[in-house]
Length: 325
Image 1 (cartoon, rainbow, N blue to C red):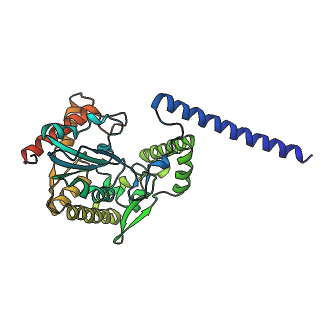
Image 2: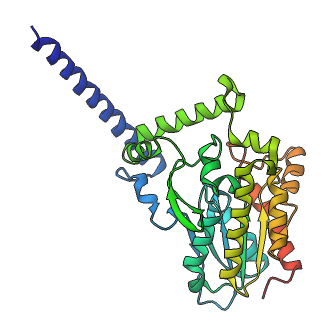
Image 3: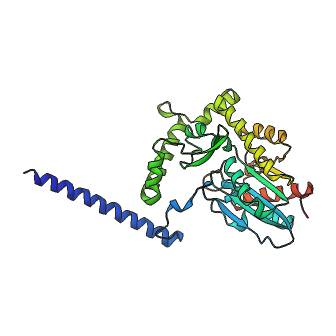
C-alpha cells in the first residue's frame, strides 16, 4: 500500500523534470534561431575574476598614427544592443580623426572602470581618457547601498572598495544561489529576472511599505551616512583613476543629471581637476520634449538617434577644448 503513493510521487517528480527540460530546450532553440545565441552558451562565460563580469571591448588599430582616446563607462558605453557603429563615441572617431579604445560594462561602477583602465592603460597609452558616468555609480560603488536597491542592483558579484582594499561581494540575500542556478538554466534566469522586476514594481509603488534606497537618498541626501560614505569612496576611486592616468588628460561626462548625484559628481571632478562636460542630459531632454524618440524601450538608455545627438555634442566640446591631433 505504501509503495503506490511513493511510486506516484516519483513519477510526478520525473515528469516535472522532463517538462522543465523540454521548456529549457525550447527556449534555447528559440534564442538560437531568432537571436543567434549559441545553444550551449551560459552566462557563467561572462564572469571575469578581476572585473566581476566582462564588458564590451572595442579597440581600433593601435598602429595608426592617430590621436588615441580611451573611453570607459557602463551600459551606455556598452550600448545595450545598439549597433557599435551607432554608439556615441563613433562621432569622436569622425570629428577628431581619432583611434578609439573603448571598454564599457553594463552596471559597472567606478571601481570596475578604474580596474579596466589599469588593465589596458599601458597597452593603449592614450592621449585622452573619457570617463562616462551615471547617477547609479554611487549605488554601485557601495555594497550597503546596492544591497538595499531594487532598481540598481545587478545581482552579480562585483568588486567594492572597502576599508582600503578590494572585496568581491554579492549585494543580495540568496544571490549566489540564484546566480548559480540562473547561470546554467535560461528558464530560471528569466524567472528570477521576472521576480526581481515584480519586486522592483512593488517598491516603486510603495506597496506593503516597501521602498528602495534611492527614495531615502532623494529625501536625506548627504545626511544619509551610507550615501555620504559612497561619495567619499567615489572620490577615492576617481583619485585612483587620476593617478593611473598620470599626465594623460581626463574628461568626464554624465548621461543623466539626477539629484543629488549630479552635484556630487561635479564637486568630485572639480576637486580632482578633471574637466566635466555638462549639457548632454539637458540636450536629450529638450529634444524629447520636442517629440523626438531618443531612448530604447527601457526608457533609460539611448537609442541610435540619442547616441548620435550625445556623440556630436561631446565631439564638438572636445574639439573646442583642443583634444584632437
